Image (cartoon, rainbow, N blue to C red; front, top):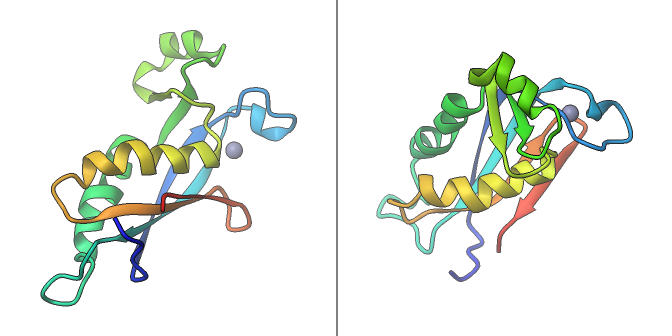
Length: 144
Ligand SMILES: [Zn+2]
């Protein structure tokens, strides 16, 4: 797809736990964030109304996916040494992912793995995802 200068953005807020294995500081502990996740989408052309897409469709396909799959759960890396014990205690509370759950990896995963499936029946692609752990700290993954 050629680079389109017109993009749309919608964000969604979720609360989610995680820990970063090997982190030198506080993030090695089990803890959580009120994540704000920004989705930036584009399409090859505007529709007949002059839009990339109806914002409601982004809500339905991406924001609601977050709400249904990640909100109020604990994200754990499949290689985390705590995984086996947590699975015995609270299996339904876990989201097991194939990466150490930093904001960078979460942004990449949403862009490369989740969005292509969720947006498969639209003309739209997710080209940028920003994951805020706090209002001061965020990671951005861009796919251009
Ligand atoms: Zn954290």
